[in-house]
Image (cartoon, rainbow, N blue to C red; front, side):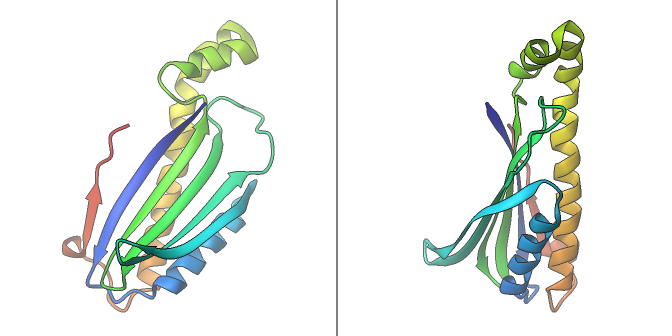
Length: 157
């Protein structure tokens, strides 16, 4: 079982080099230990250009419950109006399975630990990736983002 933890942010009026931003994102995923880029897509959706990259974990994690399984990053739009969408998937991280997964793998104490650890692992990776995305957007934009230029979308899971 894989649970997605999405992150969506819209950037406006920055004059961003989207190809440079995309290359930076791909490089970041390639530089992340244990991730392997497996798919890249480029094209148009609703007459808007998009680029997407997916990386998956290339090794078996020591702590299986809540471990990062995959990451997909999609850029959609134009240099002055685009969306960055990030989806991270983690093994056994839905509300019903973390404790069960830990119980199956490590016994009763593993079930209790697994229930709390899975959310932390997904949230930690999401925070680190979010900070890196902000740096990459700043580094590839003509104008530095302000609060008026950035719109974050809360996504409930």
